Structures are given as structure tokens and as C-alpha cells.
Image (cartoon, rainbow, N blue to C red):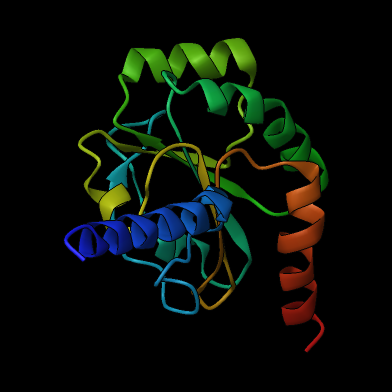
Length: 174
């Protein structure tokens, strides 16, 4: 009887751990899905005197891709973003997250620039408002400014076909 309580507690923790290990970390639910995208106004990478705001994208679907030049997974995702920018017809806004300005410029010069615009989130506060866990993350925002989907981790062609395109098509065919 003396060991029953610790044994039960250990078994309960083991079950919780086993359940947690089966979860997909890329499927973290976001409380922002279905809600208006958080407002912000940030300087742009190319022209720091100009600012970008989500209001500038009203009336069309767009992606917010959170990235940084120090991010290894962002480098893996980048070639697909280049292709998507050419082929998808959906503008991609880059949110340069907690990055150095020279590093971001060098990254885009070396790897290419898939972004319609890049906003600089130097201190990461906008990322916090958007519920960013890490980079890369990509959000799909609809023409009314509502977040429809959040992708954690690198965006792949499979993710685009399975998650993003059906949402875009279902809204544009209504």
C-alpha cells in the first residue's frame, strides 16, 4: 500500500508522456484561426522609412511567412517559397523575425527574394502577437483580413496542396 500512490502517479505520467509523444508538433492549434489578423505597422527591410501593415493586403489572400537568416529550417523552405511566389498568385509577406538587417539583406541577395514585401520584427513583439512559436511559420490570411490557417515548420508542396489551396478555393468559389 505504501508504494501504491507513487506507482499510480508514475503510471499516469507514463501514459501522458506516451500520448504526448504521439502528437504532431506541427499541428499546434492556434487560437487566432478564424479571427482577424493582429494589426501592426513595421518598417520594411528594403526601405526602413516605409512601413508595412496587414491593412495594405485587404481584398486578397496573402501569406505571412515568418523567417530569419539564422534559421536552418527557413533555408530548407526557401526554394519552395521562390517557386510559390512565381506560380501561386498569392503574395507572400515576409516577417523577418529577431534578425539582423545585414543578415536578412545578405540572405535574400544570395538565395533570392520570394517576398512581395518584408517587414522587420527586430524585437519579436509582432511575432508574439501572432502566436509565433518559432521560425519558420506561415499564415494564410483571407481577403477580409482573417487568419485561415497556420503552418508550423517549413512549408512544403504537400502542405500547400492539402491545407492552403482548399481554403483559398473554398472561399473564392462562394
